[in-house]
Each structure stands twice: as structure tokens, then as C-alpha cells.
Length: 321
Image (cartoon, rainbow, N blue to C red; front, side, top):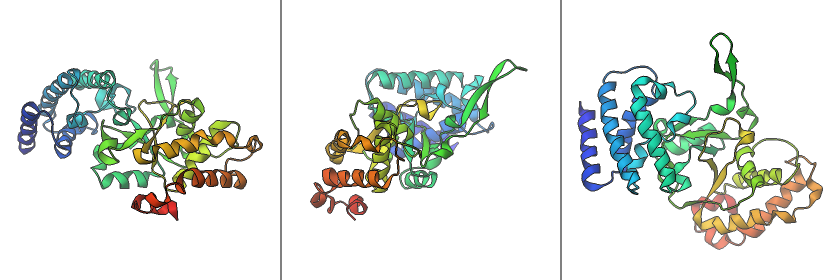
């Protein structure tokens, strides 16, 4: 009862003031999480579902009218594409599913920034991801491990339907794929100063999805991968991401988020990779000479240039060292 009163008060605030706080968005999304993500049926779900339908109709009206705000942080983005979230597809949640899909489509059509429509984000480890979000927001309301990469679909001849079959591949990567539930998560949890690195190169986009994989350098994709890996080892603040769900990492096209302050310098590093000698093709990605060449390039083009500024910035202490 107290939860419902609190939610109704937030709804009135949205109508009268036009937006809500991050903390108030958590109250609303907790209700959505209970109805759409939490396994099993729980007391009061019908009442919660009725409130959410009212809430999301208002959100859809506002985003369709060109309005944006923290109220969007109450939405489960792209619900129809969620893997192993069976509750989303129940008959009881059909109206919510339609509303949330319409809101997700409007966010694209109204040009909500890509960083605010992220659905997959990469970290070094699962512990890094949940530890990072724990400081900013409730990790359980933020996201989960991205599971789709680790499953294939096979036909079940008894039922005539395709069923998911486990076929793990993510253990091959030295990184963690995190599935994001809500829009605006990057702005809230990382920084409003994060921007997409504007590099229109298929090798680069492939590398953003597949870095962290051991192997041989065949072309520029593996060079890009090695640069990303070394930058992360240097604690340079970069994140690779996707605004779409992909079934396989090797078919995925990711992009990169960087801090606006270092955008030009990080861009400079990637755009100067053409100087790397072709003699490295055919070598292992972690070849010592290749690693040394790339590390020196990063230091020369980025770190040394910004040493004075970086020494004033605690987030770059490890990089300078």
C-alpha cells in the first residue's frame, strides 16, 4: 500500500513538473522489474500492472511529443528482444510489452543519443561491472549478464519449435558482456560527458565487439583489438557498447564511448594505426614487439601530450604511472 502511494505521488509529479529524480525512477522501475523480470507470480501484480500501463502511456505521450528526461529511466528498453525473460511475453503483460516497444521505437525516432540507448556494455570482469554500478545505483535494477551469445537455437521435432541450447563462447573472451535494462544508464552511472567515438570503420566496430580474444593478427581488426586491450590495461576510460542485441559476438557491430575530454586524443591514436608495419600480420596479438609499438604510440600521441592536465585528474593516475 505504501509503495502504491509513493508511486502515485511520483506519477502526479511527472504530470505537474514534467520529470522526476533518479531515485524516483528506481521506485517505478522496481515495480516494472517485479512484473516483467522477477520470476514467479507475486502478490499485487495486477495492481502494479495497471499502474505501469498508466505510467507508460504517459511516458509514450511525452517522448512522442519530443520530451526527454529521467522519466525514460523507468523503461525496460527493447523488451521484445530480451533473451530468457519469459515473463515479458506472458498474456498478462501484452499491453506493457506493446507500450514499452512503442517507447523504445520513439526513442530511436526522436534521436535519443546512442549512449542513452545502450543495451550491451563491456567490462573487464563481472565483479568490475557490478562493483561499478553498486556505487551509483542498485545493480539488480541495472542489468544482468548478457546470455544470448552463449546459446544456439535448434529445432525440437517433438514440438515443432526452436529451443535454446547452451553453447558457451563468452568464456573465450577476457572481458564481461553486461546487458543493460534501462535507457540513460550510461549518463547516470558513468558520466554525462561520455561521447561516441566517431570512427566509421568496419574493422574498428568488429574489434569493439571481439577484443579480449586470443589469436593471430590477420588484418587491422586484430590491431584495433590489441589497441583497445592495451588502453584498458592502462586504465584509459573507454567502454565498448551496442544499442542492439546480437545472437553472436562475431557478427556484432559495437561502438566505443570515451570521455569527451580525451575524445580527440583517443581518436588520434586509432587514426594513426596505419603506420604500424605489415610485418606484424601473422603474429600473435600479444606479440611483445607489437605490444611495445602500440604502447609507445599511445604514450606519444595521447598520454605525454596530456601529462600536465592528467596529473590534475585522479582518474588518470594509473595511466601516468
